[in-house]
Image 1: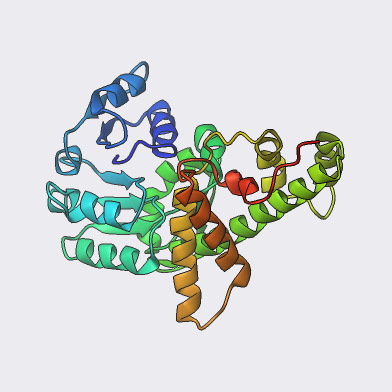
Image 2: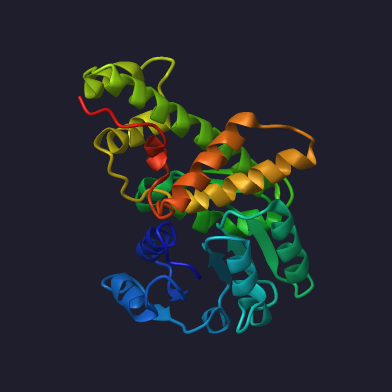
Length: 290
């Protein structure tokens, strides 16, 4: 497994608890601390100094990294995994990347007789910890069936949409929905606070009606307290929206709401909030000091 960040680490913990032995490589924490954290119980965890070393003798490589460049580096960079994967093995890519990048990775791997599925996930760090992520898959049916036992450990619903790249296309649609719903919650909370309404009570009242959403349920508290602990990094969502807007542009489709949220996120990133949760969109509206 390569990538033990906010999503990758809890995914690795769940795989270990399910009885899989893991070879791990990560940039975000020292490989030693990763191995220690993972190795308090369950099967063997080996930590490797490179993706190339991590995949030797492995049946499956699971990648969970931040962007297209990172995926390309894991597979084909200096000491990349692509050169050492066993023929007949499988790559499951849980990263969110451009559909074209997924297709290119699959093509290059297939030349070495290695299967690839794109399997981006949604459900936040909460879902990763609980093993209840939604997994959006693109790829060959046989490869998906090979991956299914692993995917069932990390996710509670697994969806196959078609060839490689289609999982990433669905993830782009997901991120457009996330953008609009978070922005709507941010605006609604700004209005409610300025009207000096009892906002906890307002949220509770509205959750069960037509305005209810995952963002309202899981992120309104952060916006109300103006504290944005990480569920999903704003900078990564911004990268995902760029992918979605590129896909829309290829179809000559304008997405004005998504475009606006992208610009709001750019402004917040310039203020140094790139590592805050996406719910920091609340900062785009003046605070109410009543």
